[in-house]
Length: 118
Length: 426
Image (cartoon, rainbow over all chains, first blue to last red; front, side, top):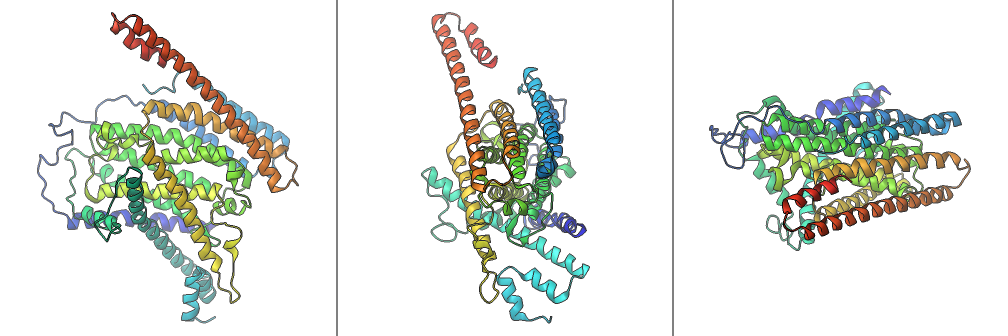
């Protein structure tokens, strides 16, 4: 068990090398002549107006909330699916009820009209 | 056992080299660590190199679909070295960092994107025994790692301090988050059929590929995988005609190239995962277990070939879709996920679970496949019928509105908003 995750750990430690090496080589090989106009934030060729870090409407907020519900559902459903053979009728019934409750949540969100990109 | 260079080379040729090294030097902990490092380097290098081939192939095939020739100068008639030339060019470009950017977020975003797409390959089974590591929660690991790419996109959009980048990142997050749900629920079905979360377990369970059990689940997964990798028709997060280049507007040189590489690597992984979960992975009529009389495990090499061919076929579908379909509008795309794919995948999962429990335990694989297939066809037909009715209703509404507008040509300002309101209300 431990040696299984050892591979993932080594992978996670080594994997930054692969993107960082080209970035460093790029910096060494490429020219480097910064000037204020070149470094302006790009806005279709006209002068940059203001900052992008202002108050804005986070349109994906409700989607993210609904997503979190379904993601947590998945955490519960994956082990159930993997151990489906060992489940008795009662457990299957509970799972079915669980899926129904989630579908009900989706219907509720749908009816409240929160699944609209505005 | 003593080290023998010929034996070593032979084990290298039939992909049993790790077993050979273990048999020579024993199971010392340091040896495992060294083997792990070698494995990481091999898998990552393979994934990065395949980008060159895929990039060239995609440009060539897209060109053919669009009646062009495609790359044909660098590296002979077929432009074989085009991608190499592109990478060299990107390497020698100036790195322009906008003055308003948040440096940490700006620079870590491309690195994170590539890292996460590389980490996915840790659990991909290439052949029997040829796999980074066979986690017992393999599919779960894949979903966990692939959802980190959302963070990379958000970092890039926020760190650039560019309005287009921010808009692209918003769309990206909404899209990736929305399509992750049907993907997860669709992937639950093969796990349910295989009774295993490990990727190897999925492959081993497919005496008959799961595509013939649950084609609907496979279809949902394929569409969601397209969206998850941000490829056309779901490339709203980098829609050139609307928001310049989306979240990577401010990236130049290799920083931009890394985002491209990450997209290709994760698209390749998604096609490989589709093959693993639905098309039987490296299995092809037992060819993966062939061992020659002198102990040479020819099957492993053949299995890798089988996986490569199947993955290329699935990736070809990705390219084909990209060359054929136009881009969605953002609200259409989100509606498609939440109001069609999520309910459909829930129904597919529900029916598969109940059906699998109702079937007697000693039923043959073919009968089991048949039962699942029939249920899937029925669900698919029902879904098509619902969609057809909805489309018809909308078309009639639109015709009504158009007719009303034709009647009252004198007040166009009344009818113009009425059109969108009437359609939006349904």
